[in-house]
Length: 482
Image (cartoon, rainbow, N blue to C red; front, top):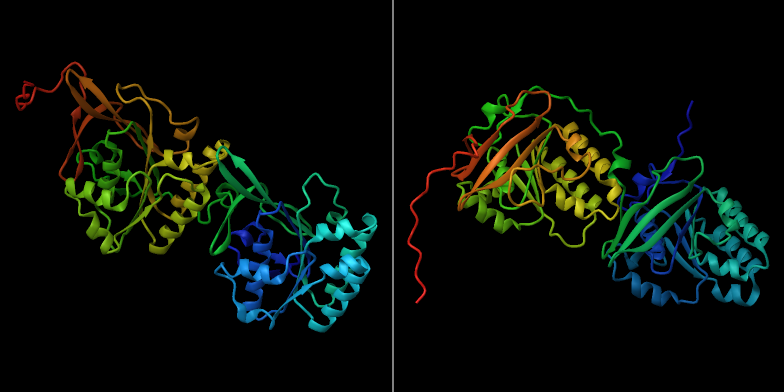
């Protein structure tokens, strides 16, 4: 029979998922990271969550910084609540004891305080200071062992904070049950904060690096999507149904519509109608069968204006909750945070239609480009498992001509359906064309079709013939420059 270890929830968004349920109750952990990486914020965020649940927390500092300065900094964060300080949260400074009497005196003081307060969580901030005060590595191991022995009886969970670097000799690492590292690096001009569980004794944990951010709400961790959802939370039922594409004349060419619970990628350069294709797909959304649109380049107001121009009242659809709009400006963003925001929005309304405009913008937010295929595969599988039908776009470079280019290696292989949108010069005119490159498990014509933007969105205008340009339309006279 498998023994299920009792867990202590951190309540830090994403962290318990990485720890496969939370910290093991009664275990000891090291939180390691450079100054400024967020160790103290993380530890206090966890501690205040425990206090709110009615548990007793003892927070010990071995640092020169006063508790007044600590509270001043913490008071700017949403999780801080002064009513718990001094009640079921006790802050004890042993820096002067360590400096004047040594590590043994600190152990003695801790033993007395723990016996008096009987905490369910003990945080020691400044383990590196204790190491520096020790005569040798055996003293540090003895210090950690004493803490563990005193905590074992009451099943007290221990968090030890240190700014020691990964290359440092750290004898205490052999004593603890888990090690959580906070990395802070530069990726070009931006800062990359990533968390890694490098040790988890007797318990699973998601491997690898996971981005985190620190805001006024505190710390939030975003597990790598392909790690957390290596298998979708729900299996893809592969229903035989078809959904109307919203493009006049397209559904007849592809067997009655876009296959349900599939991912369709429309790739092409700017101006070919990719966003219009997405809006056309959205127009059949209802409050009973809602949709979600994730947009990067265009704000909601600009999308409303664009939709109105083609006869789609998107603003009313948003007001009636037939459509949920998510706008993520192309600035500094974390790809996993965006993905979880999308999945939460889909789950909130049980959306059946999804438009992601576009995949290429999501790819740009990735700091590690080696994740592209695995990330999009995990996202697509999860959305399909939830029964959603996805239309996504990808911006390509070549503005004119019919030559197709794969947006990135292997990405076309993990989508179910693939459309190519291009602009082809015909004399002084530019003609929009759409090619159906792939419909998984379905028949489709291997031809290019001319398309136009009309009332209701995109419209198919028959097969494209490069040798037969459209007739010239009457043009207004060009004013002469005097």
